[in-house]
Image (cartoon, rainbow, N blue to C red):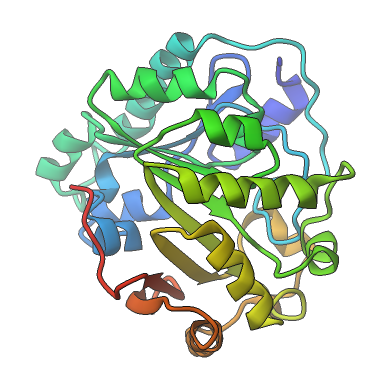
Length: 306
C-alpha cells in the first residue's frame, strides 16, 4: 500500500511520520509529558511500561470499521497496493522514532536523562491507527520487534480471527466496544458484513491464548454505555487476564463526529464498571482518574510486565 501524497500530508500535519510506504509512527501525549516530568501513561501505573521508551506505530492505516470515536480520519479510504517486509517496517519505525525524539533535545524543560533513555526504546504499541491484523505479516513483525528485546502490545478490533490466532505479542488487546451486534453497528460502523461474528470468534480464540490478554472497552455517551450484562457475557466468553474500561476522549478527527458531551466522566466509567462486575467474577484492580479508565482482573491484582 502506498499512501497518497494528499493523505500523507494530512498525516504529517497531525504529527504522524511515515515508516516505509504504509506504516506510521507518532509520539503520544504521555511520552511528551514523561520527558517533561509531567506524569506517565496509565500503562506505567498498571503494567510498568515506561512512557518515554515506547514507540506508538501501525503497520497499516487501513481499517474495516469507521468507529465514531476513532481519532483517525476514517472518512478517507486508504487503498492497498502492496506490503513492506516486517524487517523494513521495524527499521523505518525506529528511525522515525529517533527523528521524533531528537526534536526534544533542545528544550530546557526536558529531563535529559529520560531523553537519552528515550533514544533506546524498549516497548512498541502496535495501536496507533488502522487495524494492524490487516497487515499479513503481523506475526513476523512482532517477532522482529522481539528480536530487538522490545515488548509488544497489539490492539486489534478482532475482525481477523485467523491473525489473532497466529500472533503472540507480549500483551494482546481486543477492542470490545459493544455488548451486542446492534450497538456494534451503531458505534463501529462496520464496512463489511459478518464482522460481528468474526469478533465473537476472536473472543473464543482469546480464551485459548497463552500470552497476556486484555479486553478494552471504550465507552461513549449516547452510544454504548448500555447492557452491562451483555458485556459481561462476552467478557466471560473471552476470559481475558484484564479488562480496561475507559472513556472515549474527544480528540483528533473524532471531534468532527461527536460532541464533547459524548466523553464520559471518570465517575461514569467507574459506575458502569461496577455494573459489569455485578455479572462477572472480575474485580477492580486499579484505576486512573486522569485517563478515565478502570482496570479489572480476575483476582483484583495486576502483574507488571517490567
